[in-house]
Image 1: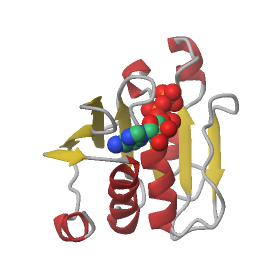
Image 2: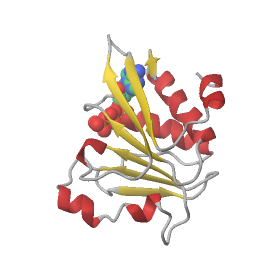
Image 3: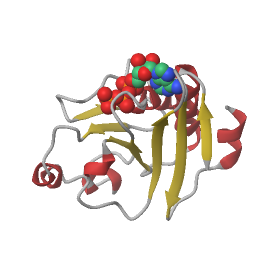
Image 4: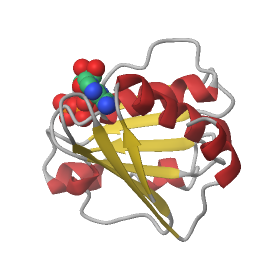
Length: 153
Ligand SMILES: Nc1ncnc2c1ncn2[C@@H]1O[C@H](COP(=O)(O)OP(=O)(O)OP(=O)(O)O)[C@@H](O)[C@H]1O
């Protein structure tokens, strides 16, 4: 599925729609160059989940956890990590809900994952003209409920 995102707000709205409809243990793999809009989309995701605090990039903290919404949000950024550091994060803890409350896992720079979960949604953001972006969305072993996604875009 390809979605055109003419401005920042459109990218945020895509995140809101996903935050409103996804189930616990959903994993969103975010791909795209610097400034493509990955964090913007996760900010929308937080809004869609009803998280009342600002979502900030986890570039230095690696994982930011938000427990205040409809489901927990686990937000990761792999930009600075070597593959062995990614492995040490034990990411399956988050997407399998082992010793954490099952929630939504959003991973920026998912290109750097040395392995993938069993089921995931990939959102690949690319640049268009000026402020426009394009989102190519694909799923693996899971589904995005279509109706909320369409209704909010
Ligand atoms: N259509 C658009 N979608 C998303 N962001 C846009 C769009 N048009 C302009 N922008 C701007 O581009 C910037 C995107 O920044 P953002 O931090 O979301 O990207 P990123 O992919 O997370 O970058 P990085 O990899 O550096 O963390 C923001 O300043 C945003 O306002």
